[in-house]
Every structure is written in C-alpha cells, then in structure tokens.
Length: 244
Image (cartoon, rainbow, N blue to C red; front, side):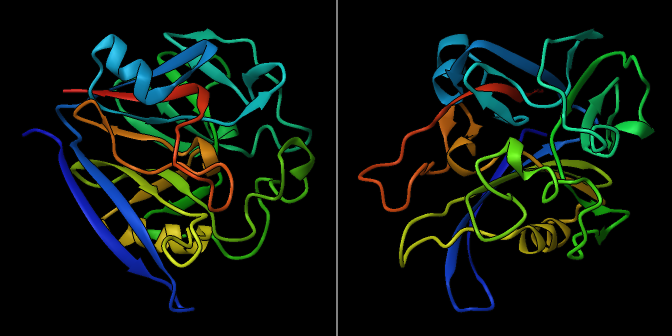
C-alpha cells in the first residue's frame, strides 16, 4: 500500500483552530532513514533536488554554528553534535531505526546503536497513553537555555512521529497565524496522535522548522514569526526520510 494523506482542522478548548497534516506510511513496507545536512538544507528543496518524496523534519539544532542538538547517528556512525545539557542527555527521547522503528529515552537504547538514531523529544505517547502530564522528565523546561524558549509551554507549529500497530504516522500542524492557525501544545499533540492510532509517539523539531513533505511537495505552511508575510521552510540539519 502507498502512503496516504489526510488534512483536517482541529478546534482546541479555547475555540481556536489549527490545520493538521497527516501522512500514514505502512509500517511493514516502509524504510526509515536519517538524513544529515551540512550545511543546513530546506527539507522541501532537498527532497525536490534529490528525488526523495516523503520526509519530515528530525531533531533540534543550534543555529550558530549549525549542528545537531542531541545525538544523531547514521548507519551506526555518530555525527558531531552539541550534547544535551547534563543530566538530561540520557532521558531525552529518540527515534531509533535498526530494522524496526523504536521511540524511547536514550538510556533505553544501545550506547553505540546500529542503524539510525535521532534525539528529539519529548516522548508524547507510550503504550497508547499520553505521557504529557505537566512534569519535566526529559528536562526541556530545566534545560530551556539550549533553546529559544521552553518548547513545552504554549501552542506552536509542531511536528511529530507516531507508531501504531501497522503504520508510521508523520504529523505536522500550522501555527503563528492570528485567527487562522493557533498551533498545538504538547498535550493536544499527544491526544491527536492517540486519535490517529499511535501506540507510541515523539515530538520532533517544530516552530519554523516544522516541515512535512509528501509526494515531493511541502504540505504545511511553516511560519518562523507570527503573521509573517508568507510561509517559508527553514533550513534544518536532520530529517526522517521514508522510502516504500
């Protein structure tokens, strides 16, 4: 079966709406790899240039110099990165692909993983239940100095990966458009993934970096600033690439 695409509008508890983009990839017939961009690339432009049809933004990064924030592994090789601040590095959730796709805290995965790994987080869903409860188990609030702000607070454009019994769920939402797209908070994002059937789910890089490509086309409308004149994807340093 090919990947399928769904578009919907979601209303939050405050009556504001947000546009949601969902691509469902068959779990058993989809290969997932990690792409690393040095220098950074706009994901939709990279996909158009290289012929890759399906991708979503990966982990966080430092803008100057551009390098991954958290671990990034490709084919069992570690990419130079900025470590997550202590003591949170072992707790930050990752996507690990070694023939199977696993979403788990770093300390639940091999020290030297084979295959591909991208560290992102926080984990949104585990065993079909939301794990967003207002606590800070992965240190995103405590370690917010490594980001522009505390990514766990407020509604923003978001990106996430979910795993169900038979699908990989690539999700993006719009935001930062007054009266049009409010964005989602992490609890709303977790509940959304559960409604799509996710058994496990992880938050990926968001804000202006939130990028989802399907059939070679950018689906979402990335806004780096509130009500900027036009949406435009941001150059990123990593992505998850899906191949049938």
